[in-house]
Image (tube, rainbow, N blue to C red; front, side, top):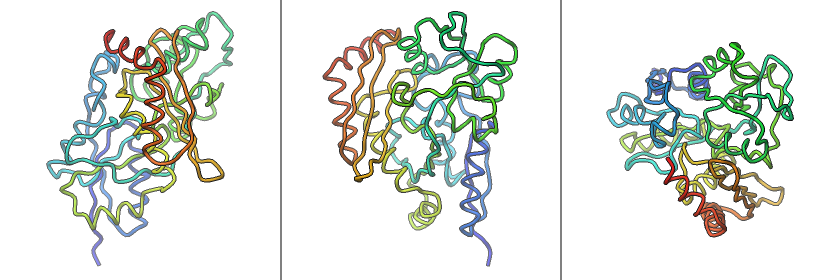
Length: 306
C-alpha cells in the first residue's frame, strides 16, 4: 500500500532542519512519507538589522504560511517561540512536540565569570538584553543575529566572550559541551514556547488527515502548558521586540504554575508575577494582573520607543 506523502515546510537553517526532520521521523513511524520543503523567510534574508527593526510579527513564519495557503506544503514546522501570539485567519497550530528544557544558557570556548566588568555577551533578543541589564547591569552585549552556526563563528572571532542561547537549540546542534553557564529559570524566565517545536496548518488541510498528524506529533502536556503561555502573550500583546516572558509548569497536584512578566528596555523596571490555575484563563488573568501592576506603563513606553 502506497504511503501518503506529507510535505513539511521549514526554514533552511541547520536547527530548523533538525526540527523538521524530528517531525518527519514521527510521521514516518506512523506510516506517512514525509518530504521536507525548505523555505527562506524574511528573518533569514535580513541579517544586518535587529528583529525589532524588521517588525515583530511573522518574521520567521510569513513565507511558510503563504506556502501553506497555496498548498505548496501540507504542514509548517516552527520553533514554538517564533510563532506570533495571534495567527492570521485560516491558520492554526495543530500540535506541539514534547518540550525540551526551556532554559537559557551561555556557551563559550572559555570560562565565563558573570561578575567580570569586561564581559561581553552576544544576543539579538530584547528579552535577554533587558534581563541582563536588570540583573547584571555591568555586562555589555553585542548583536548576534544569524543561525546558530553563524553565531558560533562570530564567537570564535573574539568579539564576545560568550553567546546566550536556548538550551534546546544548543543540545539539538550537539554544542552542549560548550555550555559554561545555566541561567536560573526563576530569575531569567524564558520566552513563551521556548524548547518546543510547533506544527502549523491552514484550514485547507483535510480534517481527518490533520487529526492523524496530530495524533503522531502532539505532546498533550506540552500543548496544555504552551496554550496557557500563549494566552498570556496574546493578552500582553507581546512580540519579538517586546521583553515579555512566560513559563507554565505542571504541579504535582495537576495545577499549572505560570510565571510571567515584562521588563523595560533599559532593565530598570521589571514587573513579574506567578499565578496558579488551569486553562487559557490562567494566562489571561496573569497578564491582567501584570498590566494593572505597572506592566501597561512599561509596555506603552516600549511601544513608543520602537
